[in-house]
Image (cartoon, rainbow, N blue to C red; front, side, top):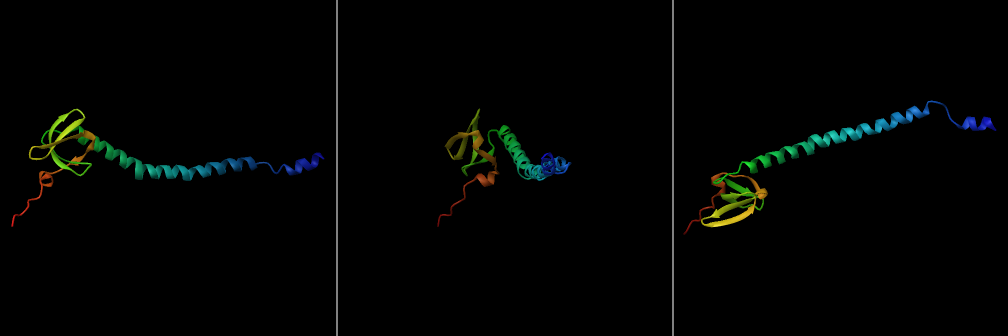
Length: 116
């Protein structure tokens, strides 16, 4: 009976091949992570860093665009609150993080209406 059990055990060295197979399966996963990092994560981190620097450098008189699509000129900055002047004597307060980007003065001016 001992001979039958020995015959069913298989041949030696089979365990080493299984270990290499699992390592080979990790290579595509690592490669996919590296690709995702360089295509998605890293550019997003750069963009977030640039936005943070923009918010830190805001000053009174800058023209900005908000995440809600409102153009305005910064009237005042009080910590995390920015007061925008969106028209003559029309001011709104918003969170500093809602400022999307700096805008040119031409972008922020309302269009001129022609009276006919």
